[in-house]
Image 1 (cartoon, rainbow over the protein chains, first blue to last red):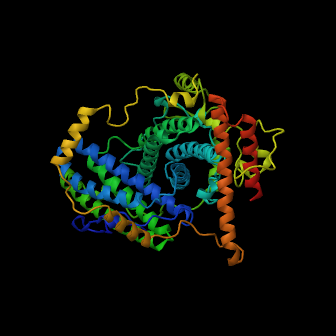
Image 2 (cartoon, each protein chain N blue to C red):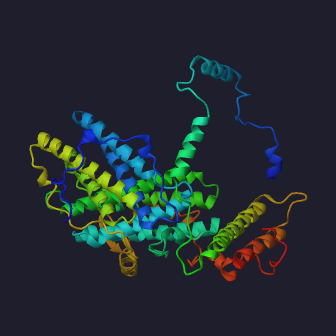
Image 3 (tube, helix red, strand yellow):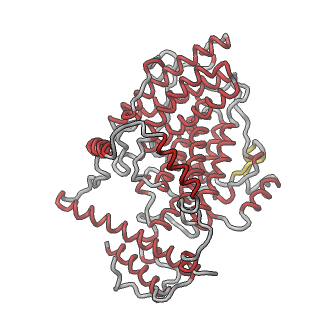
Length: 406
Length: 129
């Protein structure tokens, strides 16, 4: 079994069509859908957004490819619409944020656990602990602003614990760049992993940059500003894993392969029959894109597409709780930092002066992620679930037993 | 520092509305007259789409399949809703107390102590539910 990206031919481009009603289908239930269905919707929206981002950049640089890019990119945009519009309107931006961080944690954990290249696996684990901390900070924000428990969205699959503290994640840009894989020697799975996580992080960055200013509470505005900055760092980190020596058509082929691989992973795990049909259709569309781009690649470069798409994919992204894997990484690697492309132990080695200066300047006036989660420990129902943790700091001696109307 | 009530009724530089922009208003009315709608009908079309999508939709959420008798589910559903309402209310009073600390109160308005008491009552209601 598995997926053969070049043998499984999918739907031809000319038969890939949509109506508005197909693009805007009934959304998933915020509370009734399994959390991993939401995770898949969030990730695949990110994959489609990154396909569009790449194809627009390519069109600006390579006029000979503008026509096929325009045709396939339009289909990708409609695919993104269909997928992203599955999110329900009663899911608030902050609840969606919790879903984004769960996606980052569980998908990155799956990728890190199966990554064949030890350096890339370490980089994925490095970023994982930072997104893990973001979930904790946003959960504290949700509890302290709205009195809501993020576990209602996470459905118990993902822990809410401090990771590598967000306040120390800020690094100089030159300490976010990593060593790229070698396009001639790297495993296909490594390339698909790098593109998958880059896409997810870039969508998270863009989402926070869009919704951050919509919050009235200043702590929320500060926290989104701070974590959006880290997501920008993560995009810098993960995209630098991708070999810049790949040709544009090689990159395009890998992008389409990544989308097909991810839709296949969705099909393999989806229990909701209606949503599964959507994933199957999108997989067939992406396989059609792989076919079209493989032909372009072979015509323009006079190379066999099998030089890039090597062999059958047997291991999908695993949509299960990675609790024990994440806790193991947390115990062993929370103190890591970076010096250029190298990961270092911050308890033993000094981070570069440029990063220490950059961080201390940013954090000089306020550290939003520390303010929002000061003393905060997740418990079922949040701080307000008990009198002791829920009381106001000035409430000693305040009457609380009668008189309220609501 | 001016209080919120004072600043909100002071004449200033608000650009909202078209009254301060008479020339632009006239040009916009002229444009709307020159370029008519491209589709016929009225607001009823939106109602038709709403009805169509409402009939396709599922409920917002259902109770989990817990070990309770079906007859009790409606009560638990409402209690859960009420508990979340009271928790969010508690946090709203947290924010309101900060606003009072920033701006001060006003004649006839609640004191900080009164807001604190109501806040603790909201918390008590959440815990009761």
